[in-house]
Amino acid sequence: MFAAVMRLDLRIRDAHSLKEKRHVVKGLMAHLSRTFGVAVSEVDHQDLWNRATLGVAAVAPQASQLERILLTVQNHVRQRHDVELLGAAVNHMENPE
Image (tube, rainbow, N blue to C red; front, side, top):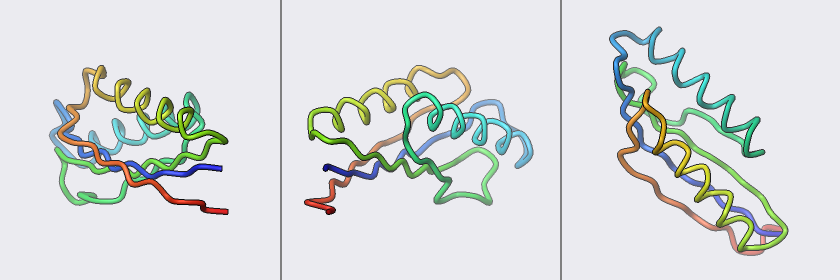
């Protein structure tokens, strides 16, 4: 079993309030979780209306499958029009069993 966490730093486009930001972020988190089978949480910048940092956790039976999942999530976020991906960092867990 292989596990990794990824940090996604985002700028929320066209958000002018925390309410607008929450709408975008909650929708994105639900979509990523449902579509890619990953766990997602907002982990930083909760008090800023135009920024968000998401933590994404994934587990897979093979390292190559785990890499594909994380890359696909990253590419999906990069293609969205309501957010800008400012950065992404991945930390792998060695033998989490």
